[in-house]
Image (cartoon, rainbow, N blue to C red; front, side, top):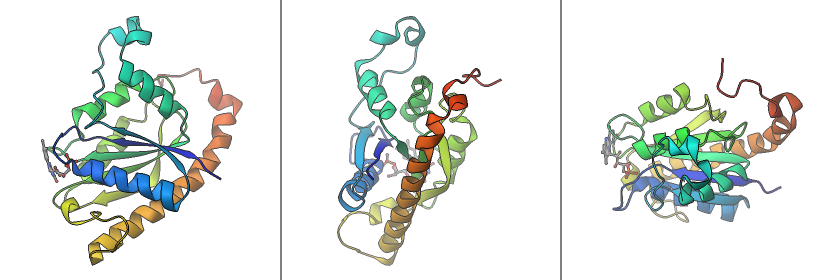
Length: 205
Ligand SMILES: Cc1cc2nc3c(=O)[nH]c(=O)nc-3n(C[C@H](O)[C@H](O)[C@H](O)COP(=O)(O)O)c2cc1C
């Protein structure tokens, strides 16, 4: 059965962002190997307006790009959130999405986090996302995640194994996406539940 996966690539760098490379690999794998549908929101190509008070006062006209992205994410069954490590944090434009996606777009959908580092880092952005970004979005991060270390040297050719590290990371991404597919199927039932649909605490306690 095919589900729809919203892939968000969090780097806003214009010059060959490695997060976009990883995002395109994930897209290729989901579509070509696992026969799933995808939507890719690449923040190096699509600029979203930063949250300001017009989000509250005039939501319909807040941002054309967000209107499109919001609809696509809402129509998805699961998410893959790809974040580079920038000064130990996630990029501001990715953080912004968690201020925008507060109208149920990600709610009760499973999400896989993939962090990206040109060195051997990549843990901090995962802990940052897991710490609080689920609160008003109600996104469900699955226990598995992926850290793509030394990113420049892996995933450069989707169809051929180039090194031992390339093989390992491809196996890990393949495994975690297959796990995400199982969650995507299970969460359909969760979203259908009456108590989930009628949440009296949209902002927590
Ligand atoms: C502003 C900035 C800060 C960065 N800080 C870190 C860092 O704290 N840790 C790290 O491992 N890499 C850091 N990097 C390097 C990224 O890991 C590298 O650019 C990698 O390719 C992922 O980012 P990208 O998707 O923008 O290419 C930084 C890169 C930028 C542009």
